[in-house]
Amino acid sequence: MRRVPLTPALCAIPLLIILLFAIAGAWIAPNATEQNVLLGAVPAGSEGHLFGTDLLGRDILGLSIAGTRSAVVGPVFIALGSMLLGMVLGTVSGYTGGWIDLLLTKYADLLLALPVTLIALVVAGLIDGGYWVTVLVLVVLFSPTDIRLMRSAVMTQATRPYIESARVLGLSRWRIMFRHVLPNVLPIAFATMLLNVAFALVAMSALSFLGLGVGPGEPDWGRQLSDGRDLLSQNAAAVIVPGVLIIIAAATINLLGDWLQERFNAEVGVR
Amino acid sequence: MLSQGSLLKFTLGRLLATVALLLAVSFIVFTLLQLTPGDPARNLLGPRASSPEALAEIRDQYNLNEPFVRQYLLWLGGVVQGDFGDSIRSDEPVTALLANRVLLTMQLAALAFVLTLLVAVPLGIAAAWRAGGAIDRGVTTGAIVGVGAPSYAVGLLLLYVFGVKLDVFPIYGSGEGGLDRMWHLSLPAVTLAIGVGALVFKLTRTAVLAELDQDYVAFAQSRGLSRRQIRSMVLRNAMLPIVTSLGLVFAFLFGGTILVEVTFALQGIGSLLAGSVTFKDIPVVQAITLLTAAVIALTALAVDLFSFAADPRVRSRAAA
Image 1 (tube, rainbow over the protein chains, first blue to last red):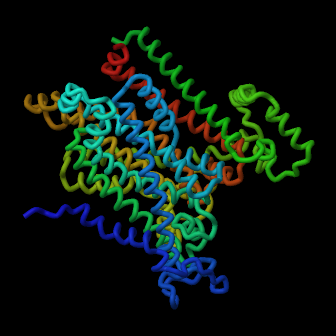
Image 2: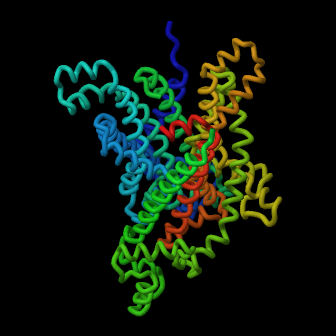
Image 3: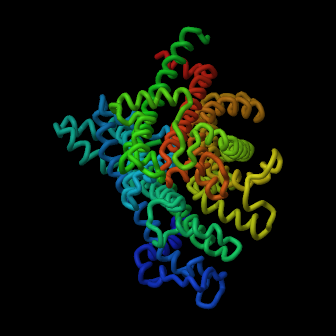
């Protein structure tokens, strides 16, 4: 009998719940943004409010469920976009080499010379373009690591015998690149993408914690944390609920991504 | 042997590369003013009354009437002499503003760094030594979670548990004098050290594992050298890749101070940057970005020079 692997089994349940909140949050908690200023911040366990309310009288649990969408959707697009860039530019860079390779490597070096948090904060903050501009900025910032990874994955593949046979058969460079090399590096790309979702989730929420990305009044975990900071003695649940949600989301996605990466790395033969 | 010529050549090459990198960063930082939507002069004026005279004065002060390249060169000339212009928010020179706050950030980063070295490096060595064991699997899983943990959420939870609930650490302020300062900075430093420590743990574990895999270890074992003797050889060699990743670690550390300072309401460089971005205080943003890049680039340079001097393999690779 084969043992069920522990890591994915443990991560699946919280991830499915978070996914459910992200998709159906608006139905589960339809009145999440409803304010009740007269009520103010009541502590957890008050009538009708399992985790209490925030300063504007909004229900913490409902707000946290509704906030899942903005916490998850952006990061998924960031991971997809940056991996797409990584695949195209990394494959071209690794397979053709030459000055394209040099240029892309230098671009990656430049972006990696600074903390991602800092560039994201400065660029997204100064442009001030809202949620999707922030997503776009993070795609650009996340791409260098993906370009590097795909480049090294492709370079390991390029020396394998099947590529040589394809070349002998007279297939074109582009055909070999995208039809034969790319499918072989897809698993590792997927695992990396999962890890990027986790990092993007933490980065996106960090930006909204600092007051960027999501508009005021919109449900969002990072925004809840910065609002709830001053409520620590009145209703700590205002911080604990979204805080624990971010930590669990990041941890489970990271563990799952790492587990996949280790399995696929052995197969593809990338270090 | 370490020849004078090759060291000089290597140093010069790396120095030039660092200068080139910083010039590229400085140009990008300079264009931040142009990137910000709106008229640069009005942005620099901020909330002050935008009379034509005031606008003309600002244009003159920041050379906005000059051609773009000349603007950049004049700005860079000022920067080299420590002049980043005046803060829009406080009207003070940016340099003076930074000087007031840089100490706190350095203390926070140093405390977190020391914590990291004391905990993460020994753990990394221990985990690699018994790779696959219970300790290794436990701490490695912890590090996967820790390196991607949201410091602001972790910090607020720590603040609640140790500041509000148990009331053993202060909630606000940064303290007066040495010991009190350390007391106030302990929760923020622990928060910062979780992420950095997880990264350093991974780096250490990988470096030690790679050394243990080398032929000389198998040879030493078969010759019957004691574990202690082998350990000292392995650790000496594993030191180098750990030191080499210091640039990466510093980047992680300085990125982390922004969020940790805001989380704990500390008046350092990081929270100044966050506040300045929201306020569109562009000269302050430019100064902090460029200085952070300079610190990280110089760390990387120092590390490269160190490894060149310490490791003959690096020398032969550079010569090849």
